[in-house]
Image (cartoon, rainbow over all chains, first blue to last red; front, side):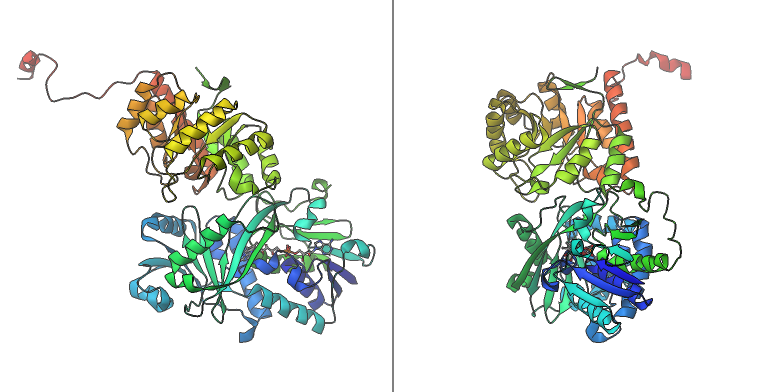
Length: 341
Length: 258
Ligand SMILES: Cc1cc2nc3c(=O)[nH]c(=O)nc-3n(C[C@H](O)[C@H](O)[C@H](O)COP(=O)(O)OP(=O)(O)OC[C@H]3O[C@@H](n4cnc5c(N)ncnc54)[C@H](O)[C@@H]3O)c2cc1C
């Protein structure tokens, strides 16, 4: 059977890979001219942090996220694939200690680390932060590298990946369509909304951090993800807005201030890129997999695209092969046909 | 008697901020369960230059509550006035919660800019809800500038420290018996909100304490109950604490104890 996957963001790529591995003839298309200009996924931090996210997300994000981390580990087995399982650290400045206690209370999978133990994990932060939370089982990837790897896996498996191709030109081209258009999918999934995120990439070889670090702050929480070679992603704002292409001065100042607070040497960093995109989200900030006619929709990945797409892709593969979707918990509904326009 | 703000009668004395909830779905449930009538919306942050926050705002419309747009994050009179204009257009309301921030760290109000912005906006027909300190002189100037509601902070925004200076808040109540006074900012626990209401405050505005609770929906309800209890207690004229230093009954009675 031929399957057309629309949208080469992380959702589309994971679905395409699962289906190609299951033996379907897969064609993956994206309307962007190339991977460098496509979608929300390029701007992600690449944190695979199911436990940290549990602090303010539904418990489903944690349980499904843990499964996804294993998936990434299998899909990116080589050192130069960029998958790193080195845990993550959550820190707060002295007067925001309350935030740290609150975070610990609301999440699982962590241990409290202080003084020497903390400087052993991340020597660069010795003396700056007296204590933190260490989430040993968490991992991180470089989203752009990971997506490149999946694209070449797809080609090895005989699937086609085509850019500059809009779904509207492909009507009736396949027996089954998997629609992963991100926010563009709101023409069909009317409940989708955008949550803007701004980020920056900096180069700062003078600092050596090995794992994602979250700095808690009552108003401006922030994280830093190492990309290797002294490159760091600093993110990310969360703004209820579907404005796509504008990084505001305020956001930039906040992100940079946070980075300086984490380590003063970030003031020396070279700014490589400012990025902004809009996360596709449903009302409960949980993703949905749903079906209408011969189209399956995978959308609403919100701030959990890399964390959740693998599991959703496995569901799609299972569903296409005649299996059932797993039942969601009470307050999570897999959207049915009625709720589409 | 129900609460009246600029001629609008409201059942609930709890006003809710709408940021920092785990999801819009949780926010909507919290609004419903807390039975609040008024929610505040931060315009500047959510909208950018255009109307890009539409999806979120139409969600709020579904909640069927009155929207009190705010000028959160504005640091100058001009910024605050421009944001108020934008708010009036988008939400079609003369109400504006006026914040002119003077200090980046504590987010304390710039009271001088506040009075100026309040005057400009009141003259333009806005109904201004100023986020202010417990300073009586500033409060009087705000009233003079046209404000018919005052919103003193209890402690710094998001600090959850509660009523840092109850004496000053009490004085404010005493000085402005006819102006609705709403506690804005600094509340962490329902008991603190109840304490403010027992002092005769008219309402309490909350955001972080509810939004960042483990269960925002239950916490919203807990605050609603505390606020109602505090208000009932105030109306029922509570006993005042007594100074037990000197006896008030004849010492004669003591004989019975022998
Ligand atoms: C700053 C930032 C940081 C983030 N950090 C993380 C993180 O650390 N961890 C994590 O898990 N998640 C993170 N996220 C969230 C993650 O990026 C998103 O959840 C994810 O990218 C959504 O993926 P998607 O494939 O659904 O959408 P997208 O990546 O937007 O992909 C949709 C694709 O569909 C294409 N398309 C649209 N319409 C058509 C059409 N008609 N025809 C053909 N193609 C079409 C688009 O060109 C696009 O390439 C972050 C997001 C942001 C903004």
